[in-house]
Amino acid sequence: MPKIRNKRTKIKSAAIAGAAVLTLVTMSQGTAHATGVFTYVLSPEPDTGAICAEPSGGNLTNGTRVVLGYCDGTYFQWTFYPQAPTGQSDWFTIQQGGMCLDAENDAGGSPNNDGDKVQIWQCLPNDMQQQWYPWPEANGNFEFVNRYNTSMVLDAKSDSGWGTTVIGTPLQLWTANYSQQQEWTL
Image 1 (cartoon, one colour):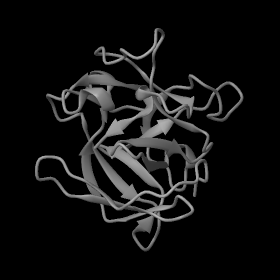
Image 2 (cartoon, rainbow, N blue to C red):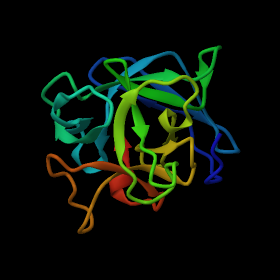
Image 3 (cartoon, rainbow, N blue to C red):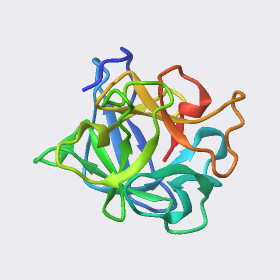
Image 4 (tube, rainbow, N blue to C red):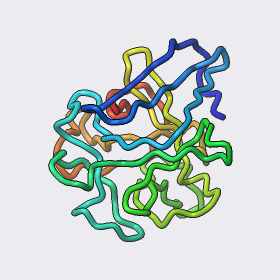
């Protein structure tokens, strides 16, 4: 479980238009626990519900880049699966159509560098590159920490500061820096 921050957060519930509710309870060590399988929209913080993360062109094949798109089709809905036999876990795979949100290996063979691509890939058992931790922020948003390298989070690429809510903006891994392009709503 990640220990990238040490703070207390009250019980946080998030729901989308009558969808299932994901309840995260953060304990004193900063540990969130959730049970069950949930389907959500991943939306960057400033654009709740208008722009969502989706596979580029709705293409569900290995290596397809995940980008920002309009929340107007079926490809923006992601299902969160806990990664533990008991159904209670700190880590989730985030899936769509049997494919997982995946942190691509860089040239060195691991997702460790700022700018490493986020893609979809066939779900692989126990693959830490496909496991994400929804870190609750005090403002009600979440950062999604990658299990392979817990200093890296899901980030909407920005070459010129925030303003990355342009359709087609690719998602990437980036060192956690508390910026808006790393905050997501469910």
